[in-house]
Length: 255
Length: 255
Image (cartoon, rainbow over all chains, first blue to last red; front, side):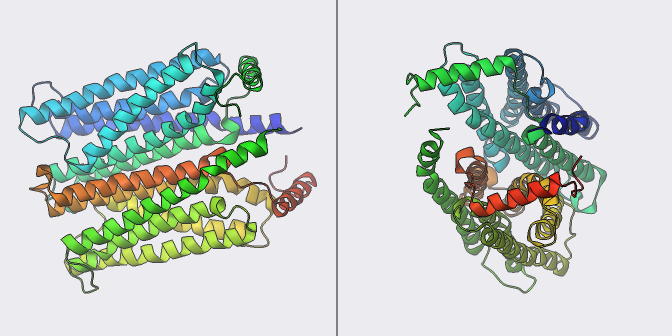
């Protein structure tokens, strides 16, 4: 155990670079999506035209990629803040992601309906809707388990690993849905020139690779052992409370 | 610590069901891909025709999804076997996955070249080639670090978490590439009827969701804490050996 603190400090030396990397990649994805829809597809509007469709990719990348990733990262970035504050920030960022993604989803449904284009037939839409529904469920369960004051610690402790696993799995699903969306958009827009390596095709493909890189870097930062949040007195108190509860036989998960 | 073994046994009660679930989902993906290409696209051949293309999706799902997932699972499934044997099985399954995926990649390049279709322009091909190259690099690094007898334990220990993280990240990339491939194939084959919910479109979309479910279940089984391989005398010996090496100052990672 002697060299643990030293190792932790060694590991943390590179931590700001990794976090900085996620922000550069995430912002690059948002900006490139914005520029792509702005420059190649006529910008943004809310009038049932193709410009209303353009709101969809921008909102989804901003909400269910960039803000989602940042909401996950807060436990690593604000490692020395009170856990309760970080939880609230995590929930608020996810709520913001949820609201922005609802705007994005309404935009595409409205565009489809106004232009008599069927909804929900493509793999992109199936994966996207599944991800969105699971995201809503996870947000509500997170609220109930971790912010509702009356929740038993034993139940929080049971749900935490599931919440963490599905949080990362859904980020991966969200990114895969974005890749499907990029591919669909390119096949709809430049079907006959895509294979000639035209600038829009290369831009869309690069955006796809940047999204993959963002997901990998966020996943790496939140799963790397020596980037974990160190134990705080507040967390210790919770842990003791949990122990008392479970060993006292009052918990539904105790044997 | 008293209830740890009991908890481990409790956890393992559901373990065979989870592993069985991965196998059912994985095999379903392979069978549905095979049936899709067999029934809707005329089966398989190696003559530069569309039937040669059909070899591509089948080999990629068999190699870089099903066998790749199974290769990852061997450390959980063969939890009481010697670690060396499990390592060799892991490497052999990955080698098999690699060989089958090479056949799949050759099939699509050959089909494109014979039919004067450009290669490597789509997001599917960019993601796929990146995943394939990283998979080859990871396989060679795994061989060098974990099966080459002269490798320093300190280096093995440094590389192990990276190998595990990138192994799972690449499985996710492989699955995302499959989703892109399904979407592309559907837009090429049934572009004008896809939005009418024709059977082929629903089959392709269902295959996509099954691939997502396979990835999530494999990821869950290999990351769930109480499914981890228990410490074995052999592993303990390795650990002591590692400690001796690093504390002796002979390791490049020691402070």
